[in-house]
Length: 399
Image 1 (spheres, helix red, strand yellow):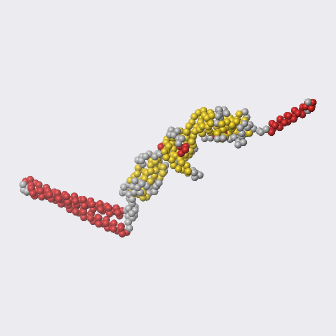
Image 2 (cartoon, rainbow, N blue to C red):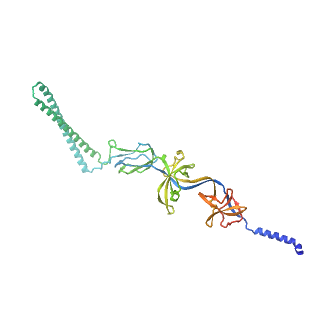
Image 3 (tube, rainbow, N blue to C red):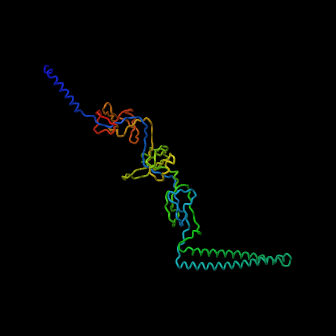
């Protein structure tokens, strides 16, 4: 006892030094990033690349075989319903060789000779008809006076009718000979595949709608065949959006759901609404060559046309579809979640220590996850917890 009293100062000093050593050697708090849980607006969304799409486009093709005149309209030109898009004229006659040309010239000469003969015969028949008319006019008063018999008068009428019929036949023969001359001349007029636009009958093809030219397949003149595409028309006022979603995501989408369009090149965000979902899917391969089963989903613009009037058919934009949304929803960053024994947990900072708390999760929105139970508003959770962080460990949080 005397020894303790004698060395009490040394004992106190030793205990203080020991306490200082224990305090200095204890593990220091782990530096962690934290965030506070709050109840805010929460929306579950799907984000996918999309492109503008026209429901109705019009492929304008050549209705007949012929020679297409040069198409002056260009891509982007606006047209009204009924405007002439392009003109088709008959196919030019093939060039004639020397022998065929000589035969055609001889055929024209022969046709002209037949025409002169037919015209002379027609003039002769005209004279015969006039003579028969004069004869009947002379005999009619004599018959009325009883100088000649009825038989002579009837014979004169019969002669006039025959003369009139012969005149009509001669006139028809002269017309036929005239057409033969024109046909022979037409063969010679187009001897080198050329054509006279002033005398050529053309077929103008008219626009079925008021819209804009989207594509032009032919611009230069040349031969076209029936059904050959010349250009494509569309009305950009009817522009909509096509979103190719994974089939596992498409089953969650319903007509009427709101959608936002971002990163489309213009200012602001465009509003839209889901119109329909295709009942059949298709296969598309990703950049890594992975086969993906996709479904086309179509949306319409709800924003005023003035905001998206600079968009055209086939333009790229990002679509964000809102599947579900609500207010006063607790959520945590995905980086705060920890998987332990098959269940999800978060580290909650309480009294300077990290406490591992199990949580029940709900919907997901981007980088946040809805929390159904396990947390309260105002709790502080650790985001990106270190791999060596354990339950009850002292931490120092930084926001």
